[in-house]
Amino acid sequence: MISTKGRYALRFLVNLSRLGKDGQTSLKEIAEKEEISIKYLERIAHDLSASGIIQGSQGKGGGYRLVKDSSNLTMWEILSAVDEDLSPVACLKCGESTCNRKDKCPTLPMWEDYGKMTKAYFSSITLSSLSDSSFRNQKNEVDNIEYFI
Amino acid sequence: MISTKGRYALRFLVNLSRLGKDGQTSLKEIAEKEEISIKYLERIAHDLSASGIIQGSQGKGGGYRLVKDSSNLTMWEILSAVDEDLSPVACLKCGESTCNRKDKCPTLPMWEDYGKMTKAYFSSITLSSLSDSSFRNQKNEVDNIEYFI
DNA sequence: CCTAATTCCTATTTACTTGGTAGGATTTAG
DNA sequence: CTAAATCCTACCAAGTAAATAGGAATTAGG
Image 1 (tube, helix red, strand yellow):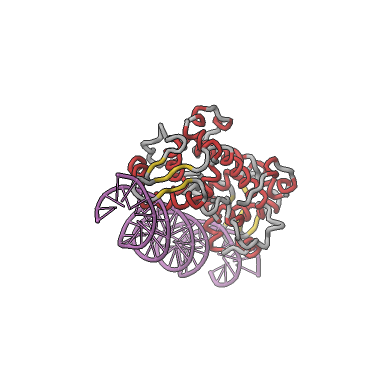
Image 2 (image 1 turned 90 degrees about the horizontal axis):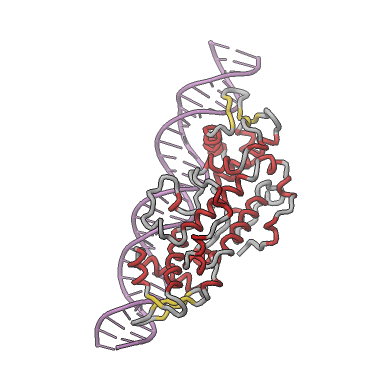
């Protein structure tokens, strides 16, 4: 499941990108608007900054601005920046010592494919498509599937 | 992330289905073969039984057998049986009080679509296709995507 | 009837991860 | 100099997942 960290990061970035090119804002503003603890947002901003997605400027009047062009910044990049690992199963975690059943495991190929699919999906969505609601309005292929169990 | 419960359930069921129609086996056997604690397997078997996927018979010589035809039993059914909720984000959890940002949340449609996609994917894979390795051998569309981060 | 093997049932423990907090150090505009 | 901001490191709390414990109920077979 996608963590709240990932969700908060997205909400933060949507706000940033709506400011337009070179727009800058402080955490305080966003924290209040989005009702997220400023201390928690700090940690998230740090991760995003470490990944080169945003850049902070210190001191009075400082804040964060988007480094990458939002039409070129994918969900996958964003979610990867704040969440350690997006593998669907523990067996595929980065650095996990490979399971000794690997070669004959009947389920592994499925998890791998699912992971690839997930990556492809989130790589296909850019921040700008969320920010300007074009995603919301587009008719999606999967719309005919009933989701709730 | 898919829980170990889900993964164990699958391994359990693959074993069961390989026994063929009306095949039956005890938890002890599978626990030893798969190196899973028998007590933990018990809980998993209980869930699967409650969902009508398997059926147990008590007493000496008892065990579990598959109720549904494995070519008609999907991954989605199995994973749903043992995992509470397969929603990608907390906002979509069954019974979650709906968020008051719901109508204007820019990210919600994406999570919904992702959830639908996940359901569609796991609904398209049957237990038999895993058991007989046909899944492993089939060339998949997503194979050209590099998965690891 | 007795025993061994099995599922069934309920509760508990343990370990890990997530979400969030605390307290300050550093930087900079005005 | 001060206020407002990012930056940094550590810690805490709560929830959840994973696993264990101990036995009750059931049944085949001797």
